[in-house]
Image (cartoon, rainbow over all chains, first blue to last red; front, side, top):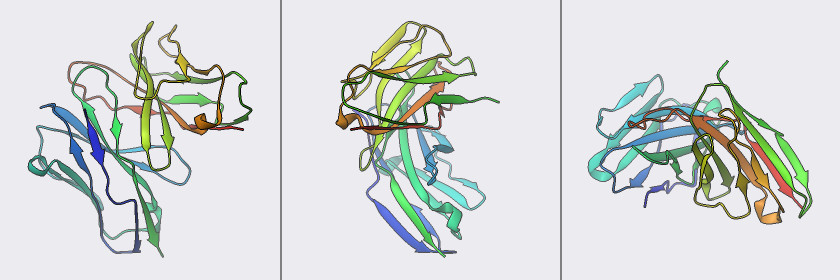
Length: 115
Length: 115
């Protein structure tokens, strides 16, 4: 069975601070994909990143960066110099490489950026 | 514009009154899926379809039905809605393949309240 754990239910930081959202996953598959989605107050799901289990390189996109560590089954997400527009619920998700392409989601982390 | 559409976006109904939430995608995707989002539980898969006339249960299928008569449409049917089906529903679609690497596109969500 697959499982994604986001232990941080809610985080609040002051604007311009850096913040890291944790994601730990469990899977027996040797090949899989990891995702992060953002859900702003308007409710839609916004795709942020997809990472193949074979690719452990960290990725940076503007103020966003992702740290994938297969040894600890973690895929953490860092926002640098946070802004009020970053306030949202963030979901980490796991998908197998074959069969039902179901995304197994974590329970989400609600991030509030205080102006 | 590539998109997944859902209708209605908001619905308030009463227990036992049959309803259908429509989902349509214009990307010629084989794979479609329904998820429900509940506080503290993240998103959970209800049903999925690998192609026309091919559907299967996800993690929480009780009380729901689906059909896939056309590639672009994947309606979610609640034959006798109950208050515990009050939730935010998302439809998603993607290409399928042996790699599983395709991005899953989400609709805007349907907020359903059953009284």
